[in-house]
Length: 180
Image (cartoon, rainbow, N blue to C red; front, side):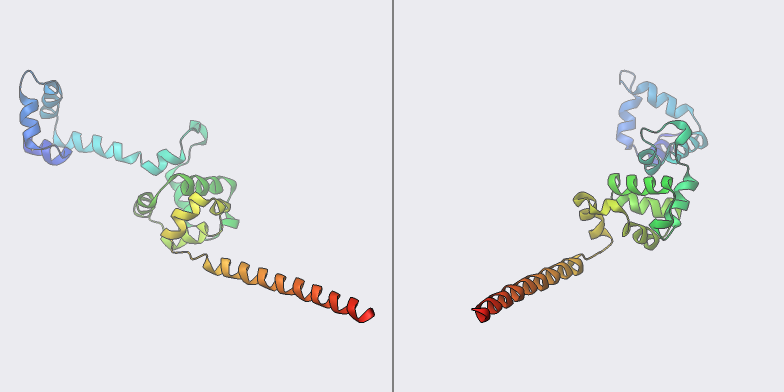
């Protein structure tokens, strides 16, 4: 490859390549290697590296080769619309994804695996990991899930309970004072 092809393919500034070209530079061997390979070989090598996707790496971390998740399994898991219909393996995929990935990984998941954000949101709303504050803080905001409705419902329920208890105490006082 020429210097300009190396620069374009690997995003290395030309000035850096000029430095690497000098005989005494520590990266001179790397520069000579890059200049001796063809552009197609370099592109194939880069494509192979991109095939080991970050999401695959995260989901398959600390798992034996026999049990590693495939691209197809991940795609099938995130195309489901209901958490309750998922298999145990798919539930583990959801759990790992929402605990360990971030918003950029969600965008990568959508682009790479061609899945819908709506389907992912539907699954997310049912997962038990949503109870964890760290998970909920990130993903509720991302999916624009407003828990104020649940909080208001809980507050109104507690107010009703307080009113009921107040009414019971009031009635007990009245009944004791009437009997005296």
